[in-house]
Image (tube, rainbow, N blue to C red; front, top):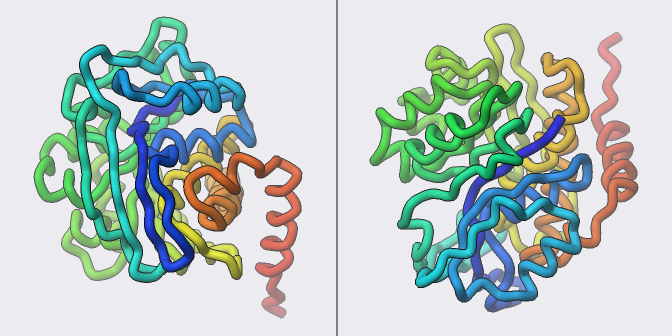
Length: 303
């Protein structure tokens, strides 16, 4: 199945206890795509400004992404974000943000992408997410991410968008904020009543949880000993998850559980370096090797 992603494409400045980098490739769509391409070709839809570095576009082309949906908007500037981490287990502190082109009209899905089977909507404005859904003819799988900003300021549009998707993905704090619950399982079940068939709750270093009407699946994070930069970990998780799901005929709970494991592994590579420096060198063989270690770790005997 074909996979389309839309989200931010940007330029980041990052500082963590392990170093500092400036002007590196960032954005939710980029972190997602670099993970997803390990499993399937990726159709990238996004908008950048005239200042978008030529070497960034050349990198995307080298990775084999279909860039028919990448719009370079004249007179605009690319999204920029500067962030710092006091420690790598905490949330980033935003030092500066230049929304730039992301404050303008959203990107358009090219006609050649309108037949996409799977659609991932990164955490943009829910009205833009809904507009993107309407531009794809008959997707079999639609998953939408969100964040606390939209929960706090765009609740009604977000509820409408959630009624249009197959799955919702958000972190534990966002799930509790959105639902008013104090338990993530109950939060997931409440979100299910809005329309999604499944809810995925990211829990950072504590792993990930899948909630459906009949099942709850909880997986731990991969125990990497090297965490350099957690930026993009959630989008990398989503990329690995969605990339794997495009290879599945059945999208039942077994496939979703296996997809969670793949997403967990791709995210574990992303956090081991700044920006794309580790995930761009990662191969499917690397993923499979770490996945076997992860599966071995999870074996239990209930007798």
